[in-house]
Image 1 (cartoon, rainbow, N blue to C red):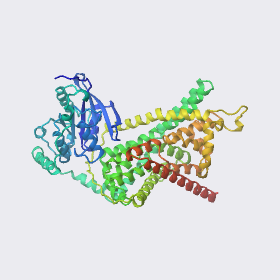
Image 2 (cartoon, rainbow, N blue to C red):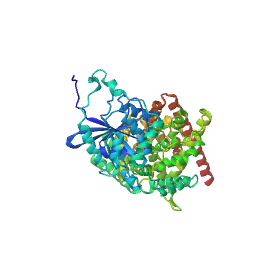
Image 3 (cartoon, one colour):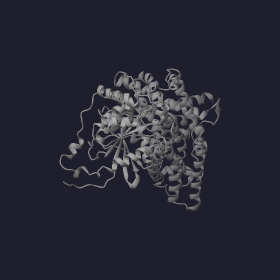
Length: 640
């Protein structure tokens, strides 16, 4: 019997425990030929890339979420199981599975491999970090392991340029024997049911017994963890010195954000100003020149200048993650977080929220207890996301003098203080939520600690490149669009006939000017003028847009076209110190961008929680800004 076949590329799925090097191997296989999205119907991230094998064969590679078992207990594990068994509607099952195994931790990793082997699908085991295992004195009989598992086993080193050569060779052999994939609609009756059926899961005791038996054969002499790792953990995990070390590391990171970024930021500022001057010199006066100079260059360029600081922050986060330090920080903070009602498992989602609240909220899927997960979701926006950094950097650069306090930079100290304020606020809100609103008991954290590793430059580069791509996509997409819209609303309708500059800037007669004047009534008690009030509106879509919006508004407000080339000097002369501090306090609690609220809606399946989030953040932001503004004015009055 014959049936129609398609010529779609064959697909392989990478499956493995968390921290096994699976994503590093995925990056090595696919390079830059990858895209990131979510699985249909859930907020579980999927990474898909393209692999080119010999003979011109193209293979689709899917990096599945890290999982410990085929018996799912989290959304990540459920998605993994559904994908590899072909149970996700509209998504074909992979033609083959590559089980990525941490060679230094076979006892934990082999349990998942034994479950995968029972599916009867083509399976290859990638014995990753084989070089680290050998360096630790762990000698694994690869051929014997292959016979025990009943599938090919190859050694890989995902952090080396050619560390996947054996895997590529085995994939060519394995995939050459497979038929071309067919679409589910063209398969014979009953074929899909046969594909989707799989054996009952093994019990944990039976799995552990089989793993011990295999290890006794293939690696009879398993060395103990190197002594220096124990000594290092004695300091890193110490309840006092460990916290001191963590605070020191974070403090130095924020110092570097300002001190290292000066040169590249100055270069970008020069390029932005030169672009504006070139357009002014080569175009006649008119709406198009105003759009390009006052809208695009002033708006987008005002955000782009902060890219170096964002990259420096992410460089250190990726460095700590790749080294194995972050899980230890989670354990270290577990007891402290437990005092405010959060599990130590919330540390990773909250740390992710320093980049953006969206992946941080999505990362709460690993928290099994619903109340713990909800509390983490509700406080994740209080972590200082990278979108706040442009606002902080602008205000600190304009109002905090560039001077040394001992060995440290005053601006770096100020930035560190703002981040600490966000953390303390999150802990206080979490305490309120867990003790007053949704009462629940503390659950200790259980997490596998990976060995310390030397950070890989390739992984760091790919991580930074991914962040640059995301940032530039936002600059070229939502930020550019908002700047054009803001320019339009800030330009039309024009001032009345007979208007002169002595009557005030033309923007006051525009739609944006009218909106700013109306909002100024609400925000005047906390020291915000109508320009700031305008900038807060597009900032609802993306916080960093507020800086570009200020650039656009002040460019259109300036009598001299060159007066707003650099925003910092303009606001340092036009704003009071109390207004600047008030805006900083506002952005510690600033209401979330709309996309974050939409993610909260998807994760909680209710509009109740995003509305509560938006309401309490607005209230906290207003109260904090009001108190900061009034206290600063009072101190200035005493000093004057």
